[in-house]
Image (cartoon, rainbow, N blue to C red; front, side):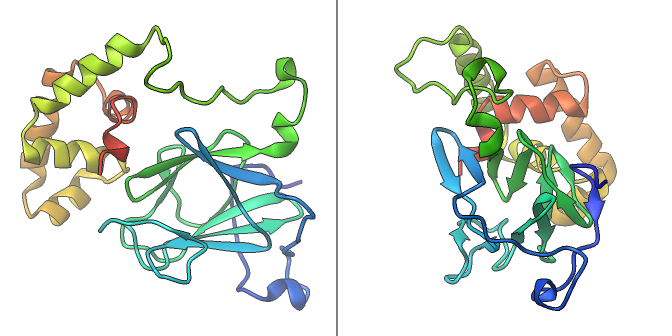
Length: 223
């Protein structure tokens, strides 16, 4: 049996018609949705392309998004996500995928500066006490005990230089130090210096904490 969130070989489009190993299926109702803040978007079957091009099913703006960036495909095992050779990659749970990946309920998907959460409707269309999905984020007017912390984080982000924000964004997007150096035209040693400054300013000890900080502060959806 195929394990979820694992890399699998994806056949070319149309393989489901010629007996390919993974067959696309068309469910009667949307089985999967993408959650972005308080918005939920159905993932239609059998395939759905994300990118900047006008004929993409989901169009995203921004220079970090390729014309044809990623593709979702329904198959008997669930929902598969593939990077279509994008320049900046696709992240699943903050890790850049290198092959078609079978997704699972609750996975986070990063494309450009957008972060989505995958909703498996078969998991959430159950009694609330059985659901494993976290509730949608509260609106600005609702009470939230974490509110003051988020405000503090936003204020701290305002104290960063433009270059420090760029390094933080690319870190959150899963870029390595070498990749960041090539993209920003600076040395790896300089990247390390900027990252050390970020950790000191933001009170983060590790790269993982920087990524969590950037997402919690709203940096990934600020552009």
